[in-house]
Image: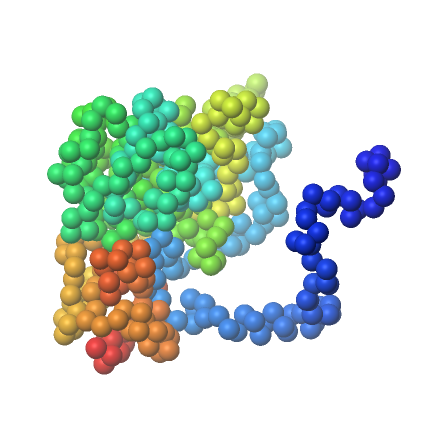
Length: 433
């Protein structure tokens, strides 16, 4: 290779890097360890962290601590699923294709939509991709996004939009929900889509039907980012008028895992079917009339005519989608409703107890599912640090994202929390305040 390139040694490959920028010393790495030494070393490093099993966690905001039935890992760990990737050859991939088809069907039922794709990378990128779909469908280049949407989702949307020359208009919130008056002012014939969250970042339940009516009146598309567990109790976005539904599927049988890998859910009404990015598995029959599954409606431009592509998604999170499929199959409609009810009632139990503490205020009072905001009479960061010493991870400090919400904390309560843990949290917080 060096002879073919006409150079004497590999150092010549780095001639374009100025000499003064090159490292002249060896890397400062510890000597190589044996496998046993390395295992012990990594164990000591891991002990510096506190995982969800060591604390009572109220941290949510897009990643939630839910119970994972053992059947999920038992099935997704099987080699025929665990090692599967892209089922391009349907004749040898029927098992994986059927699993994805069942996933699509369950997602469609859960969200109240006509069709779902075979999954996206994660919730935030699914949200941004949905914005691109709005523009492609309407041939407009302006998106309106609610300020009550997760700030990290909005940041990803801004990044996508910048590369596509799409204007993104931020919609202010009032009392933690969409400002309907402000929405009416920005909606006109130039808007491609309105993007909201239900339940939103503050835990509040938006009036999706009213927003849908206003959005459709100007010919725009409504995108709803939702929380799958909440749909065991709340009305589906599809029934409320959503055209596109996206979600983070981590809560469906996938671990928090320090941020990934996760599962992007996307479902749509029938008229947007051919605009969906990624792939869709369809059901068909073979020459002998036997039921079979194939990849269908996949936008080939994403592979071979990239200049015409509206998305760069050409894969899917098949293993995470399989975990979600196993979870939803195992739980069934009644199980999904029971989990949602436990989240709802436990969150409201803690909400009422915290609201009764002296000095604690509720900045956004209204319907919520399992997340809510409390305002503390002293530094939220200091309170969180003190509670963490007692093994209590007390939510998300909203002042990090919203300067006007100083000392406000977003609290999430799921089915894994016990009454004793909730009572102890209230007691300890009361002492600190």
